[in-house]
Amino acid sequence: IWYSASPSGWYVRVIGDGKDNYTYNTDRYPVNPTVIDNFYVVMPDTVTAGTGPFALTVTARDVHLNTKTDYVGTITLTSDDSQATFPGPYQYVTGDAGYKLFSSTVIFKTAGTKYIRATGDTKTGTKYVLVASSGAVSLIVSMNTPATAGVSNSITIEAKDLYGNRATAYYSIAGGGGGGGTTGGGLTITSVD
Image (tube, rainbow, N blue to C red; front, side, top):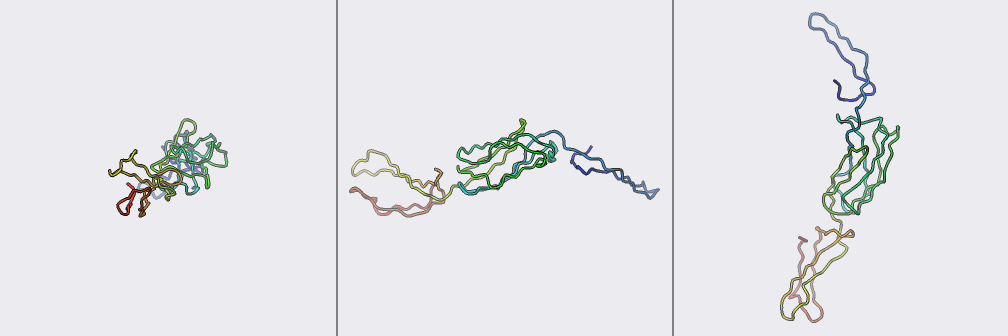
């Protein structure tokens, strides 16, 4: 039984049993992939939100992980990142030979572990990507209200990137007061928790 497909074929080599010196190669027998079983999706493992776009490849494969070179079905790409951009449905053509490169087309925007999934003919393939937040573009300040004069109050300051992700690499020193209040000196942010 052959599990690896080979359009040019495999051959059987027969070697003598030690009594006779002979080697015989049979004719080549082409081995084709079996029915579609999954899609192999490839792109970088780690990206930063909003950067790219990145290339994506999707390979149709059989159960033995051979490229399904005669695949001409349609795939649809989906993601759990509702802000992501990626190509629409794609119909494979014979010239693709089961392999499609989508060059410079994928941008993730939501931080965390996200996926992009290819689905076609009820089969799937999923690539998980770690998306890091991008640089901070805003600070969100919140506090308990109403405040009472002379009583300390908690203030939360959160750095956000362009896509609403917590900018975890934000470092800064802030301080000041206003409206007759005081912060008791400066406020130091060493990192965002």
